[in-house]
Amino acid sequence: LSFRLFMTSSPPPKKTSLLTFSSGGWVLLVSLLFTLVAAFLVLLPVWQTGFRSAVGDGANPDTYGFYLNNLTIPRDQLLAVGISKDGIRAIPSALAETATPEQVDLITKNEHIRFLVPEDRIIGLTIGAESRAYPVRVLAVHELCNDFLGDGPSRTPVAISYSPLCDSIVVFDRRSNLTKNPDSAPEFGVSGLLYNSNLIMYDRQSNPRDESLWSQLALRAISGPQVNTPLNLLPYELTTWGQWRKKHPTTLALLGLRTLKKQYGREPYNLYYADDQLKFPVAPLWPGPQLKKLHIAVTHYSTTTSTTAPTLLWRAIPAENLHAATTTPSHPITLHTFLFAWYAFHKDTTDWSSLPPKN
Image (cartoon, rainbow, N blue to C red; front, side):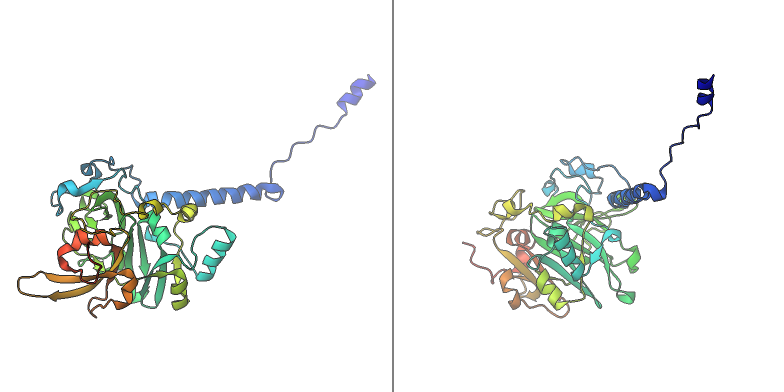
């Protein structure tokens, strides 16, 4: 009996306490927040392109959905090289995150990565009172960055384009001649197609059939509703990060997508740059050496030598002689590219006399 009384008078077992905020629940909440932010950064570029599945089979340009009936280049020279439309993700303006020079130094120091050091090449752009640096190592991953620079009347929707196979840079205003409102300017993406080994871009539209293809070094649209429309070129400076920040101490620098920061520290094109071998067909081909060894700057020239000779629009010089380049006040444009690439696009409209002999 006493045993039974003892058993019935024992207190009930204590209930196990649930996880509370003060006992560690905050850790789960913070982890969830970081997960949501990471998912947002990964999915936003996809959202920018309409959550469309991959378009383009990597082999046939007709599968990319672009209007090609008015294509202005030889059809057989438009190449699909194994990359789908948007297979290389351009940076949308909503993700064009920037940092001050001091913040860049902290990133390089604390994250132990080669993100941006003084000798790195950058594309420097100034509009109004605002200056910005776009690291070439970031653009080598994305090939295109959409952005806005300036405030008020000087607010400008820009695109910074870089084609690694040609080491070519073209910066332009994303507005066409018919689009004056900066917020109505289309954003540009990477088509996944090449012409003369050079980047072909497209302007994003709500209906893909309204999109046009733009050749970076042809400097114009080559198909679609905007066919033959020239790019609105903007002046830029190709220099090093160290020189640029010294000249523009209040500059901002493009960070790219922080989820890809390890990729920005790599040098994926080093082997390609080591010799003059090209990966894809180019025509016409520079008839001499130094196809890729010679990096040239081309400046606006514009003169007619005779009534029968073509108008020369550009002067090509070795990039190391850039200080000798001259531009007209109405066209203060200098572009940078490998020799083979500019020759393929502008053989007959360029003054080549400042270059070394072809043989």
